[in-house]
Image 1 (tube, rainbow, N blue to C red):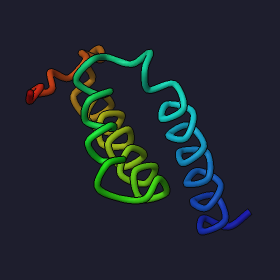
Image 2 (image 1 turned 45 degrees about the vertical axis):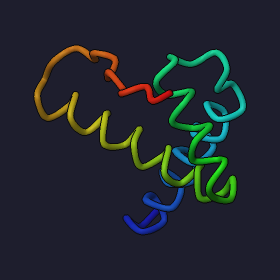
Image 3 (image 1 turned 180 degrees about the horizontal axis):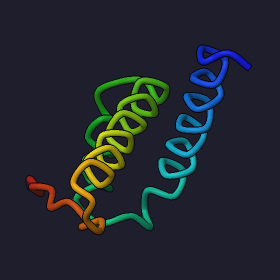
Image 4 (image 1 turned 60 degrees about the vertical axis):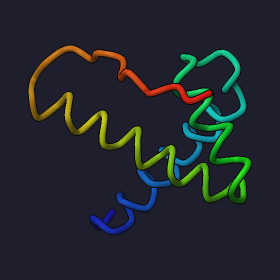
Length: 79
């Protein structure tokens, strides 16, 4: 399988994972849950899924590059 086909399967997997997180957003950390709720209020669900997948990839990349354990991000909660 060529590299572009592998990238497509990885992208599909990340998007499916983001959809799962979005469906279970009420079980997520309060900051992430509120961030997702704000995004859903402003834009379409598919756009939120892509934004969440992007955030997940960036977190995974940072963990791998720094060779550290994952630390949950602290999101600013606005009232």
